[in-house]
Image 1 (cartoon, rainbow over the protein chains, first blue to last red):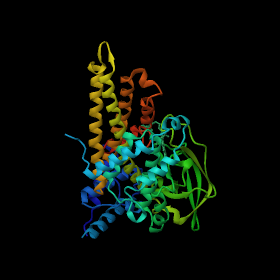
Image 2: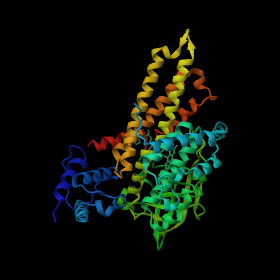
Image 3: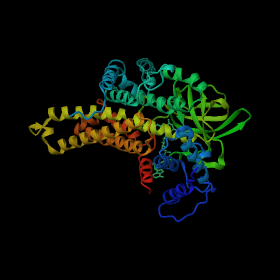
Image 4: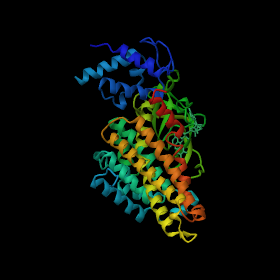
Length: 85
Length: 382
Ligand SMILES: Cc1cc2nc3c(=O)[nH]c(=O)nc-3n(C[C@H](O)[C@H](O)[C@H](O)COP(=O)(O)OP(=O)(O)OC[C@H]3O[C@@H](n4cnc5c(N)ncnc54)[C@H](O)[C@@H]3O)c2cc1C
């Protein structure tokens, strides 16, 4: 199983934490509590994940458990890629 | 070359919608608009025609057709129907209630509600906006506290389309205040549920035949089986609804713009001042040329986004751009049409001033123009 944590972290730090910001986010930090992912941000994140990993994410899969932390996102992507075969 | 991307079947649907609106929906529209009166009989006829069920599965009584057919039908209605409030009401019913229940509902929820939403027996809508939470919708205060196998809803909502006539509303409320937007869930709340009440209809500038109202939830007990989607799915449901609405509802604006353009061209050819048709004045003809350009760009954007949705694709950026451009084009074209018709345009005897009043709402509902620009900027990484 490939670990996509760094790829996802790089997108979230560079693209979502605010342009030009130099924040570092640990894989277990809450993206919601830190205000990094909001209701609009989650749409950007999903669009990125679909494009980057070639997966289709159903609306019903957009639940907090899947985007609460970078680790949760990485785990979800692994699950999607495994299911895709 | 015709800029439309409709198939023959879709084009036929559009033509049928035009004939239907002319025959069954326009009588008395002006008087109803003045009185701010909802057209119940028109609703029933639209349901009979199949409008609420165009894209719904056949097992629930729908026609099971694709998104482009829905767009074609809405274009036809926008073109020919003088009762924009009725069309708006139908669109809210479809995209913010029926369609999310179809996409997020359990088999039991779909079975319970969809057949009657499709047949038009039930009218629906959704309740997100609150007095203190408009564009910043997820700062809502409305709470849903879990008590055993039920939720207790408390709070109030405002500017809710269809509220005064709705049989059920999709109500968004906070289930976990520590999670911000991710702590919002959606509930199907039926009229008559104890603790659920609706205020008097709100008087608005346009879309006057579509009832809007406040909703009050006081210790309103909703069974767990009426929660739509998982706890915390409110944002996904709301975002999905908005994407569908932005992709399809504005087809009615495109239809209305097509009609207005035809009227402007005819008037500019026939109205004579200073010994010539006013269309010979460049300031008039250029206005009309710009109207035409906005219409064709709107068509391209709308059909592209409807095509993406038809193909089962996500289109948050594309739907925001289409909504922004079409709603603003409609306001501009309605303003120019009024100017081209001079005092006749300003007179309430004709439909130009009504079109302008109706058009302005499109820059506010479904996310304001400013919010669409924020979405676009955010997708650009700004
Ligand atoms: C005809 C109609 C039907 C509606 N139907 C429904 C319905 O069925 N259900 C429902 O829940 N709601 C409904 N609404 C409410 C609608 O969703 C809200 O009006 C809309 O989201 C804006 O909220 P607001 O009116 O509180 O304005 P505010 O959010 O207070 O905004 C005021 C102004 O500030 C601007 N602004 C706010 N925040 C920002 C920002 N971050 N950046 C730039 N500009 C900003 C806005 O664009 C606007 O110009 C309806 C509204 C109308 C007019």
